[in-house]
Length: 183
Image 1 (tube, one colour):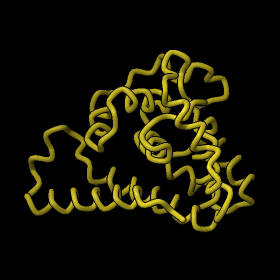
Image 2 (image 1 turned 180 degrees about the horizontal axis):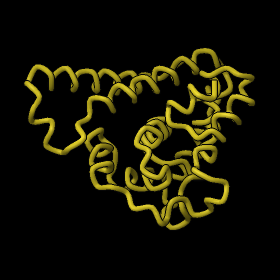
Image 3 (image 1 turned 45 degrees about the vertical axis):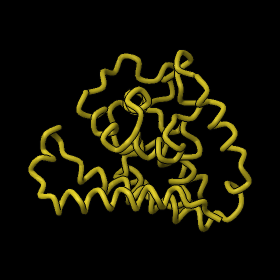
Image 4 (image 1 turned 90 degrees about the vertical axis):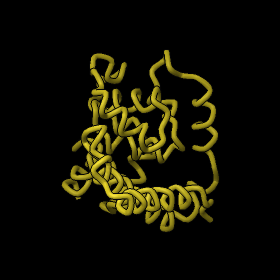
């Protein structure tokens, strides 16, 4: 269980705590981690998450390429010390913004209002079995998309138009899936 979560990019501490709370259910553990973003922080003493970490520009470009705001992408990558997978999963889970408890004081803007209102929505507590498969699909989709993103900014020029169309269509269908409200 812990190794499965670690392979998704989560720290051992987050994996252990989430598995404990979810009684060993990996799908539920992923939901626990994403719903408690402070578990994602690299260490307990990260009161100012990642201030000294320099985010590599290609990492920011990858998130911008996926449609995220450059400033939020950089902040997420700074918090997760360059871990693209964690940054993407968290941003997707919170609708493209960072939850208030991950924001540094200087960055807390109107996005903190959005995340606090979405946290209180009744759908979070209802129907957990449906939600966990959505989380699982989200993790899988993020991994798939990350595999397709080129390491170098001009690598996409090597794709044929057909390959590029496949990648774009997969990405668009994933985004459409996210926009359909789950019951």
